Every structure is written in structure tokens, then in C-alpha cells.
Image (cartoon, rainbow, N blue to C red):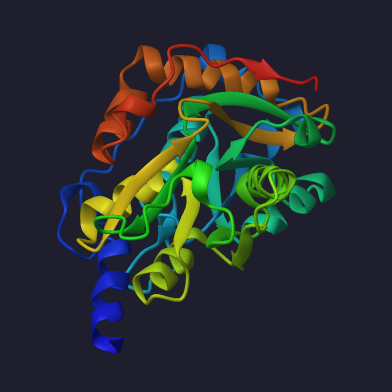
Length: 289
């Protein structure tokens, strides 16, 4: 069992040799664009750098490099770095657990979050966002879905979520309350530090299913034969780059994303990580609940 889980972990970490998760694949860069750079607030421009925070353990979105270098790989660090390049800034990518992101933005420790954050009314009370991709939630089960679990039949089941996620804070509690209103047992919500640890718990038989970001469970199903995507929830909903509420960077972030789409870098990065279907045509700021 231990050896089997090690192989699963390697697959989820991108060691399976797939081009979309190989740390040595093409590095996609973008050139500085003066019209975008001039929108960067003076204090950030003078500093010359931007700190982008994201959670870790969620391939192919953002996950630790398997070589132990400490680098973060995935679509989100690639987009963050390209965004900095069109703004004329060096980007420092920092990986943390998801529940550290909002406090870090509020304290000024981080400038932006590029971490597939769902845009909810609760988060809009403390953060501003710029939409940058589509996502949604996937329900992952063992191959063949032997217990026939769907979003509508999770009552009484042990379902994994990651700490601080919209699945933990909003979706599963609401669905569990619906179970109880129907006289069925509550969903057994199991919390994990990141989404990949939930997937490993699924493979080891410790939980019945995972309820995580749709691209993560789709990637897991592609790389781990014992996992399938059994159902989806809120599929296609936009996720946003998060900033502290009232941040003066919002306009530059929107302009930078627009430039990355115009010059083709945005599409190339999404294609590199096989998430082309999650792209947006426009990048809308969201600043009000």
C-alpha cells in the first residue's frame, strides 16, 4: 500500500513524464509593455517586484517542484510571472496553505493571490478580485464510483476538502444542511491541508470522495487510474486574482491580463498545462459583494 501511494503521489506531483507537468518544459515569457507598466502604482514600480501568493499541493494549478528545489510549478506561477513581466516587475512566488492567503494579503505580506480563488460575497467584503480563469468544483471518487456518489447523494459520506477553500467554507456546509433538512445524515466533512492530500486519502480508502477544484480532480483522474470524476458543481464559474480591498494594483492587473491574452502568452500557458477550456476572453474586476 505504501509503495502504491508513493506512485500516486509521484503522479500527482508531475513525475509521470507528462509534458504538461514537466519542470523542464518550455519557459514561457512575456515582454514589458510600457502602457501596462505605467499603470503600476509608483511604490510598487520603485520596488521593482511583486509578491504573488498561492496555495500548494494542487497540480496542475500550483504545486511544489518534485526535484525538491522549492520552486512552485503550474499554471498559476507561470501566469503570475508573465503578468509581472508585462508590468516590468520581478515576481516572487510564495506557496502557503490556502487559509494563510487572505490574512497575508490583508497584512501586506503579499501583493496578489494567484490561487484559483472562488469569488464569493464573503471574500468580496475583504478583498478585490480580477477574474482570470474559469473553474468549478469536481467530485472525485474511486474508479467506477463503486458507492455511486453524486453531489446529490453525499449525505452521510466522508468527503474531503482543503482548508480555507470555498468547498469547505460554503459549498459542503450548505449541501450538508440540505441533507439534514431532508432527514438524512449530515455530510462527514474531512479537512486536509491541500487538495492532493485529500486525493491520496481517497486512494488509500480513508474517505469516500473528494470535493475539490475541478481542474485538480480532472488532472488526478488523468494521472491516477484509480480515480474518476463522478460529478461537478458550479462548473464554469470564474475565479479571481485576489488583492487587498482597495488595492491600487487592480487596474494594472486587469491591463496585464488583457495584454497576455492579446499577445498569445495567456493561451500558451493554459495550453502548456492542458487547461485551455478554463480560459476567459475578458478579465472583469470584482470589487463589490
